[in-house]
Image (cartoon, rainbow, N blue to C red; front, side, top):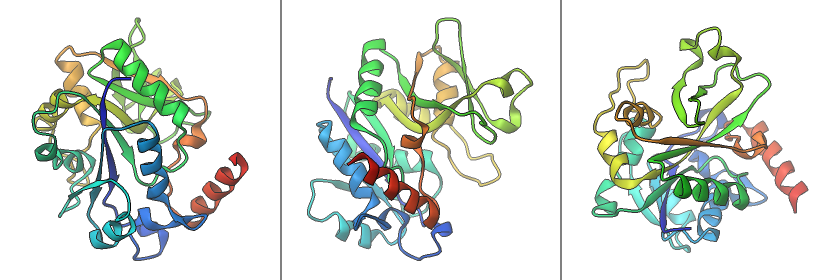
Length: 245
């Protein structure tokens, strides 16, 4: 694998956790869940690991003070696209790949990410998404592929036509990008949506409109890609991790 840098989205509040603690500091087996994500990036020899922090940023800094990570502070939480955009000054002049992970997705495995990065680099894609299949993909963005297998578009559930609704392959929010096209595309997205936020998946349409190659790699295990949003999901994640060890 060629060099890559990892960005970890870790700025959120985690309202549904019913706690004022930053979401990524909730513990699985007595370790903050973000530590699992950092360990994973570093086990893949990520050349740099940048944690994007926001809500109660100081607590997240303290929890990660003993490991080799850099921090970027998202003062206002204006969405995932904005979160990635604030790291641009730290990556000035960097020409390699950027892996984007979420601090609340602690169950991903090394094999899955290694495969994602390798397939991205081998296919010379501008962006590669991790996807999964669900029997009931209601609510998720669907992956529409062209005849060569590359991504033609991502259609949100609410915008999907009859045929698109039959697609079971979904976007799970884990990406690898070429750094420079990523930051260039982030300048082209807008926040014309109900939340008034800048969404990272919107850069995919920018790439496709520019005729750039977008790849997608499917993981057979949806559980790996689950985000943790509630105390119940935290407990379920702990069970899955304990079964693995």
